[in-house]
Image 1 (tube, helix red, strand yellow):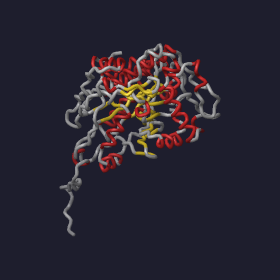
Image 2: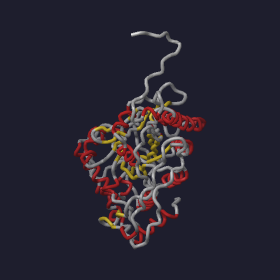
Image 3: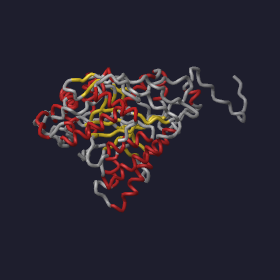
Image 4: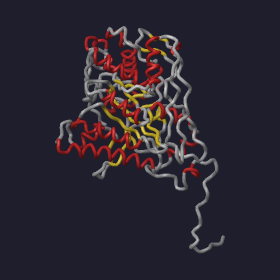
Length: 432
């Protein structure tokens, strides 16, 4: 199930294991989770997230439908969003996200869960719904403008579904977000997502949900543990295949209660709402060794470096370093400048010998442990944005790429007006 999509563009803690055991047993054991992770990176600026209320005890577990999913209370390790104090510098948010997330023989889903945990990060995993649909049941999928059972990324088998569900379960219990990358991944002409209507998108979204909510029925794995969340409530955002079809998707998503979209291309600026959703699109960052900027996605680096997933082995080390250095350059520009959230998109892949996976991992290790940095999911970023004073967000969105406030953050985000510029002592006096 390696990600071959064309895009223009286990280690579980003792607390998590206890929560999983509660969900599996559906009994009255008390949840041992103590709330959000502690953010230690607070020196000289924004406070880390406050501890959230503990998740609901095991007695609150309620199976949904055929038991593929379950209500288990508030998500563990989900920080409570705090409004900035007057004059407080905003934290530097970084979002690492994965398109078509699933666990296959590469074991990259489980690997990056460990990377996130080790570096005090949470991430967003955009699940492709057909990764929870076995090939034998493929005709249950009715893709818009295509015949039933059609998918450009295929379907899964029982082992792949079992492994993917295990990762989704653990990831959510660790505070990560489970979004959607929809289903069949159709791009270009001939019924691609860019040609879909609002009603087509609503059908695609509902089917993506249905495959998650009925994976036990569709696989026959009746005794497996449920996913510990209600996907109707959990699913609040997405990235479209190939970054196509955003306009009609956003109309459908707004009607269905989504909160954000990340299907576009932006500069490194503070997010605004578009059609009622937070526009959290990926961004352009300095492309090391070039005069132009590059989109923050592994696919785009690969296309602009080798043009193939099997490029020259002698250049692979350089390509991986180039992607890492470009992402870090984009981070530094925001961290030292306007503090705009950095949005990064990836796939679980092994293109060019896996150099892009190495680049992402090294970027996580480089940026997520710095002071005032929060590596979060899209949902957590949307929570924080919603918690802010609209006047504060208006000021932030006025900052240019890489430009910090001229008179400092304490003045820029203070309740009082900025001071008048200091008079040049060497200038001659004037009279009125």
